[in-house]
Image 1 (cartoon, helix red, strand yellow):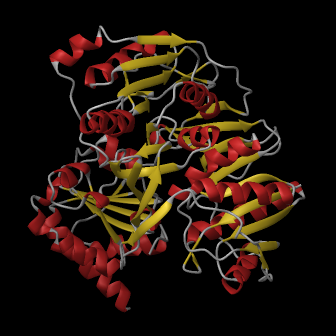
Image 2 (image 1 turned 45 degrees about the horizontal axis):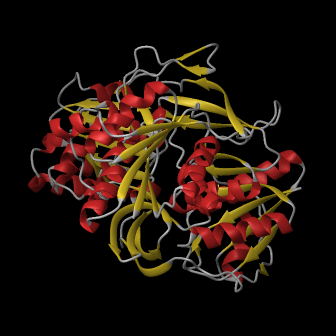
Length: 317
Length: 247
């Protein structure tokens, strides 16, 4: 038996979330006494690096386009079958979650998305997953002999645990796409919100879009991505792709700085998994303070430029 | 065109989440239920819009669940679905729900299956992929735009930090993200008409349970906020660096 990981590459580069699934697969295999195989869409050179994160065998096929989950799920399932893999590990992103359901049906496997822990093998095969937008945790017993898991980012940490391994080419030329790619657009420059480690977010307390300069200065100094609350996106002060919360993007950065956001339950649901939360609000009764690690009760227009200045000093030292 | 919209019932967003029976069951006592927002605001409305644009076809809302779900299904009819189906079973897992819906779709000549990108309770995002696989059709996930021309759809799918524009022919499954449509509020006429629209109840097909929630727990809450002096931002920077170790 073995564990199969699919590690997604973009232009022969791996995001942290792709390396984390390799780590997850390697740790699971080691606790089961099985081995881990990684399938990846990158050049042999780029793919070899996955050995550093625990891959024991790497199969690569070169493709920049993973837009057809019907075709890709067939490739992954075929590799799982031919390599006797009983567990398939995927990233918990738009691609991984779309693949997971398909692969679970193909393999008649148990499926859990957004797992936050390694499986507990003491009492069957139990993984945890966050439910109700972070208000609860579900402990899933995966009963079928085959399993499909997508692993939530920033869940188990990332460590180097091996040496590069020579990738073996996997021939994917016989697979045909059923969906035609017209165009891929990527936001250039800043780190996209779902992957950002540092996020500076602002809400209605900003009073108007013309005041966002201090937020951008702070984000730039920190190397952070900017975000906003729903009312701010709905009134058009900020673009919709910045909206974090239950009906926007759910994020889990290392640091979330909330400025002038009261902390409605729907907003908290999308950000309460952040490792450290700083809240700046002039209303000491703002519900957000209850979810915060550090709080500053003050006028944001005074305190934000002061924080930027303190950070500049810190970065320069 | 026959458009099938999967609708799910979820606790309202501010509902208090608690468990009973030794933390093995969700305690629904006092919980208000709503139609899952992604299903209602985007998937259902886009299907209705599409039917209006084409001037032909029908929109069927499908739900898997007990008779108490009928109130949510009637709302889908009030918003504009033409007919509804409820599979009379407990919506216990993504696999169970997917197999019921795929089974109905296969027998009813469905061109497009719509659903929300996730439910706001179990946050699984697995049902769309499962239905697609059971029907052996393409799956366009996290869609924020859909345009049809004949049997060809051009779909914008959200991906991390960008989007993909894809072309696909019917039949297919599409999961709706924010932007796919504008929310519609049912009007009085819609609510009255909903009462006369057909709501068919069918029996579920049997499904082997591959996974189950053994228990629930509540995450540890924050130990309490540390309030800092607004005049001393150097202290916050020091704490973020030395204590929280995030910068």
